[in-house]
Length: 267
Image (cartoon, rainbow, N blue to C red):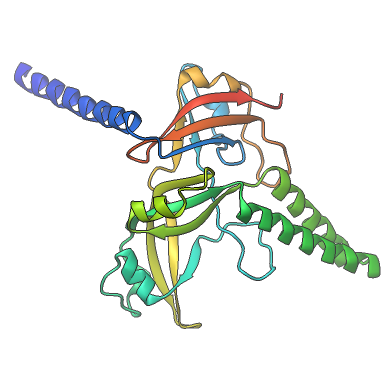
């Protein structure tokens, strides 16, 4: 019995050493990204109020994709991008088959995300254009349907300005250095890993890249950084509310994040 207990302790200690060694390596190398995000990009978990006072807070990373190239604005996140077969091959997908593409195994690729940049500004313009169109229609014909649309698009615009995430997916690549070099002159870029697969749409005869999720989709705020979250509940998604805190995050050599500072901005 003592023998097995000792073996168990050795395994646990060895695992902890590996984990701590990985953390140390990640933080001791070059800083790959350094951003100050807000509640818009790092919302609280749904069970915030039930968490113990002596525990950390797990913040999910809220990223999104831009609307299509035309001027249509969609307030929700579409996690797919049209892509060619040659581009899929360049990303590392093999044996691309139209018949079985709905069941492809995801690949872990590097994703480039832009924070509070041109893509977000474009979304605001699209939301503004859609609201102005709805407002014009309501002014010309003040019926219930036009009133509903005017109110809906007004709320969409307000959320885009105040509460929607400003962290946008730009592109995926199989090579980290390729993305790092491409965006080296932009300090609002984040390069992380994400699971990605593809599917083939028979109707329009096109492939689409499906962005499943980030490999590390959340960040733990350790106890020393959690005072700013005291008394807060997760905000409702359809509310146009100002963010109540900022979170400064660094990503290290292994593209793993850690929090260096938190600050309350709205009481």
